[in-house]
Every structure is written in C-alpha cells, then in structure tokens.
Length: 95
Image (cartoon, rainbow, N blue to C red):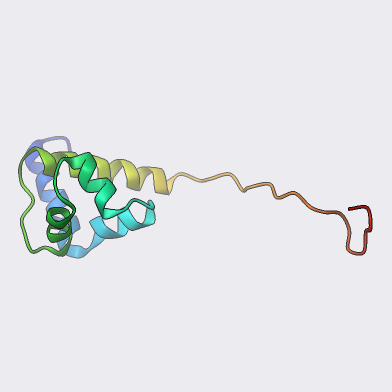
C-alpha cells in the first residue's frame, strides 16, 4: 500500500472504481455494516463508495485504504489445512 495520503486516496479510489474494494471486503467475510462501523460512516455511504457513486474523501477514506490493504494481505497468506476427525474405516461398528 502506498504511504502518502494522496497515494492512499488514489489507490482506494481506483479499487472502488474497479470493484476491487467490494471484492476484498466480501472475500474477507466482512459485511458492509461492519466495515462502515469501523470507518465511522454509514453502510449506505460505504455502499455508494463501493459502487463509485460517491468519491471517498477524508480520514474515513484513508482508514478504508488501510483496512482493505490489510484484509487483502491477510487473504493472500497461506492458511493451514484443517484437520478433520475421522470416524474410522468404513464398516467399523465401534462408534
């Protein structure tokens, strides 16, 4: 993620325009309402940002850029495979 405020705004605006911001949020399993609450804005406002109907500005936009960057980084990390318990070989009556 770029470090200057101007670069962060440009990046998050591009992500909103292309749909990447929404894609990251959904892939991370975060609802519109949850993310909006973290940003201090309404879910309707965030929805308008994601759809490109409103231009994101100010501190909430900077926080949005950072949050999306962290979520995207977390999504890219390899996750360990879950270990599933098995009931034993088929036909095993020891249950």
